Image 1 (cartoon, rainbow, N blue to C red):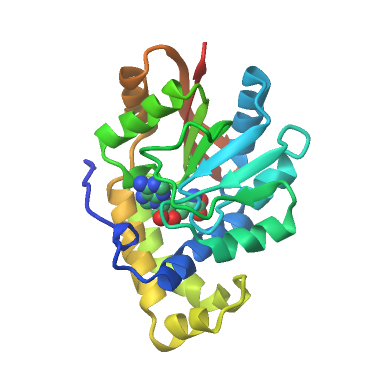
Image 2 (cartoon, rainbow, N blue to C red; image 1 turned 135 degrees about the vertical axis):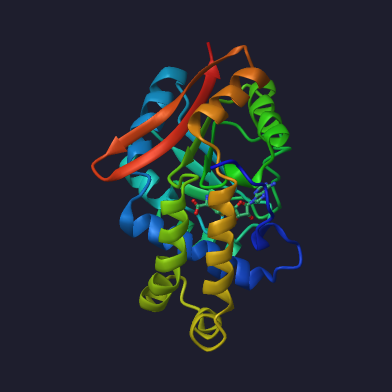
Length: 253
Ligand SMILES: C[S@@+](CC[C@H](N)C(=O)[O-])C[C@H]1O[C@@H](n2cnc3c(N)ncnc32)[C@H](O)[C@@H]1O
């Protein structure tokens, strides 16, 4: 299947902040309970060892993604995880920071295409690289190089019909079953899921668009090598049982 770069509702400024938060909180909740990014922990551990870095700056953090699990799994390797987003979900960031002292967050918007040089550490991007066009992906890689920071990009979904079907069928069901358990608790979350189900509808729509514009790991690796030939790039697919994650990492040689 070829790549189609349509826009997600999440990319739109007009999307109300609370709806956006409920959508990305769902992603964090499912990511945490299914531990979909477990294979990525070993890659980050290796990057920490190779670069001597003990800090992570997470870009496009959404509802906080898997930061809590990451902080727990890599407690010996990582001193801090800083969450950031173009539309910072401070409600969820604060909730996560209260659960693990290694997690902190930036309240100002941080655009992954133009990250301030002051933000140091390994830059991670989970479940978000499809938001960017090939040229923007190259800019993101270049900016990590010019600021002398390693970078690691992870994607659990793939550009496949089967993944489209899984999202189409399971997203509404999972929302229906799990919404009351998603934290922080908000009545708005229940209202916009069960009474006026805009959150499951938009999340399903965005999931489909996201799969259609997903990069294959070899495509990402090609963009990475073209943008920063000076870095040591690694990429591919890593598995842990049923879990499968595509990744690309880059660091100084
Ligand atoms: C799929 S969601 C969240 C993924 C989150 N990392 C996770 O694992 O749950 C993608 C996030 O990217 C953010 N985003 C989109 N464009 C961005 C940009 N240019 N800079 C930073 N964040 C951006 C959106 O606001 C959204 O929160």
